[in-house]
Image (cartoon, rainbow, N blue to C red; front, side, top):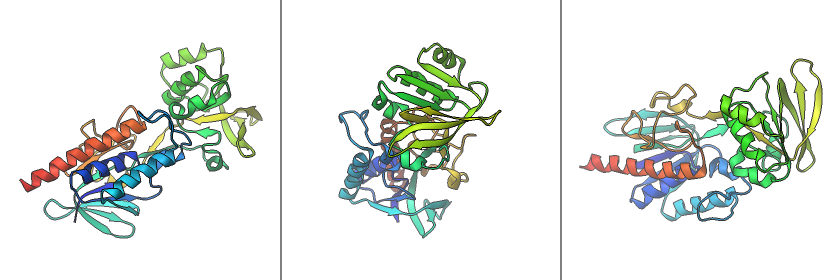
Length: 305
């Protein structure tokens, strides 16, 4: 029997583990894919307070080392369900086993929706990015493209236009779906070009991205657009389906929770990008992890009382 089982080994989950372990709780972290989460795909992180520069892998490795140093357990396994057991027990069911705990922290994260193109994995970190806030500064004075037309894409394009030589926005509709205020700001930028009714069909280059192939959805005509970087902003995909019977989900699939990181089940807490929130950054993820862990510890301690 564990005190806390944490689902997800990204910054939120690992921070939650660290805080719980320091409170003398027995902790198991379950991760289905990559220890460290999405941050491991970032070649450089320069917006974490107190650290000038580090790679995402370096950040993840240090967190993992901290968790192990405090006696935490981390297992590679996919969670498929959470069940309410007898008394105050929660049973986390995975593809390979069953684990019992007094409380559970869901830190399953969300994934950037991908283009689904050949070589996308190969170019990720080598010209393809999913976070303009994280990686935009590396393209100062260079030509970039933003894929998407919603609020995130428009915000990314406005940000990038401040220091990139040119920004090409590729939108598959005949209009932008983001806020009018953002759209109005964007169209006034001299170094911004918006391509409507087009979609990206190929990523081109040798070791690094050098161009994108775009297709006009009406005519079918294709052309190459030379860019040094592509920022994909076509939405997020939360991974909360296994927990839909345990917590309340928003229409987009995020777990309904605010800064207190609690859910409708008093023994289940949530942290990081998988919950409803407006900002998804490393700093907000680790903040959630601390809040969720402390809330879970208070809950467990109340059982003893």
